[in-house]
Image (cartoon, rainbow, N blue to C red; front, side, top):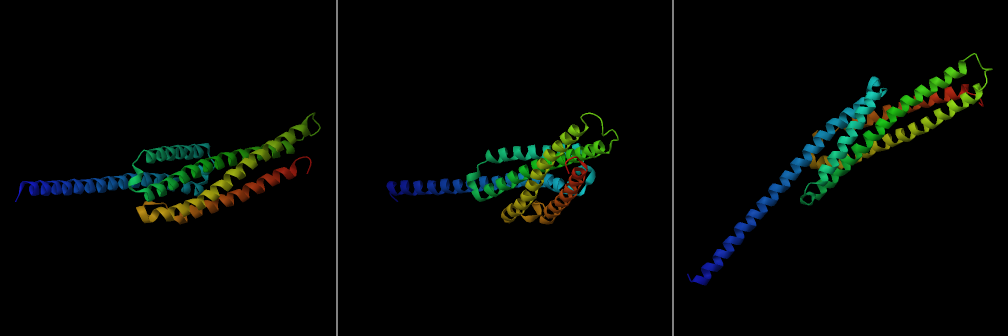
Length: 226
């Protein structure tokens, strides 16, 4: 075998080794990316499961502490989105995009859920305050009507904010289901919150919205100008 041929064979062998190593490294990094994303999704799902379950827990749903916990969840989801952005997403763009949609929806969902809870608590307190004011016997006191109208205005503003948050939560629960169906084939259904829990949370929130609307209407019926 001549020297030039040996050189060619050596170069080819080297290229084969380098190519094989590169392919191996690429597959290794892709598997690592998938593992890291799966860990983010799994952690997020645990928090989202707790958030959805809160709609069935009246004590939590009607407490400032419950709303604060939801805000903490939302902040963590925001951190996880940033963590995802720091990863080498180009190695599996479909998975990265589906995970980002999932985490972004979770962040917005819990943000509006917290706002829904806080404003619902405020609406209940304002409705009770208006009803109590209307029931006072000192109707002839100076400024009574003006104060009643002011309380009614505050109630209507809080209720408007509540409706916006409640509607957003309902829409985002539906968006979660869409995003879940995109992500499930990539990470496995077991890693994600069941659709049934999201649907139950949405339905419970809608029922709470009906009850809150009735409470507000009842308080307004008592107020001056009706």
